[in-house]
View 1 (tube, rainbow, N blue to C red):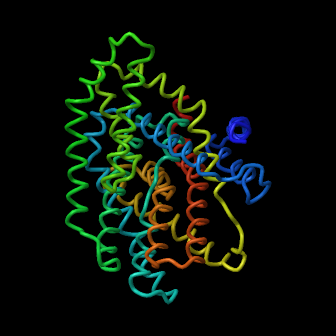
View 2: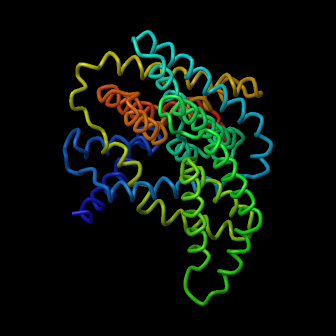
View 3: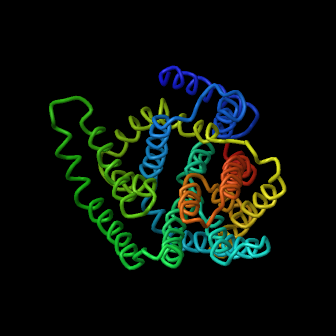
Length: 380
């Protein structure tokens, strides 16, 4: 059954992506929507299974690995200040407004704080694909977005650990911080010294595609270490890509990893997001979903755009950067699952959050297209 599902997903995602481009929208939008159509929410052709979820996870890891491979390290260094402004401002406004909204809804203090934290999350895996399609991934804006996403992820996870230390009772905040600092220290050291050495040692082995295998090993190990340290696996994969981008094997790895990723795993990731959607029992929550969706989009868009504007970007570029930070993606879903387990989210609110996360994900590509299109067209 899995083989047939993969065939259907690949066929549908490619056709939907092409149709989306013909309608002057990013291909990723079509892939997200076709997942909703194929999944249990509409046609029920594809069922969300654990193995499909695992393939999807490989897809997002490879997508962020490719983003790392295509990162201009010198530009990344130059945009560090801008990334900090975008990442921090993109947390402060959603967090504050989310907390106030929670209090207005009658939530207890910690539940309101948790709602603010949920709205502060960012996952740029969708934005990365949209940036690639628009030729903006290596631009100053694209590099700022990727840097801001790393900062956003780290800060949100630290705040989450702080909150859980109060409500969970058994969370060691100090140890959590030590693990995160240790991960980044080890990742940077490994990227500088170990990654080039591993690739050089693998290159002369008398078996096929040794360099690509070595690159995948590095990618998966970095992703695993990140997840073990409490940082999202996609951050580890991105850092692995950046490390390899500074070696002589960058172009060989990029070309072949893109072939592997975009042929199978990445389309499954995009389509699976839509497949996860479940509209059961949400009819009574439509007003809440609409309100939280508007709040989620507006606060992240305006907060991140303000940070970009302070960093010296023009308003159009700043809004494009803000739009790229809107998608909450798998990071928010992971946080929501933690909140549900800790009884900071009711089952009904969890279902609402899942729909809100999906909406932020779907609206991100067309918003980016709107703000970035003019610049791209002027170069064409």
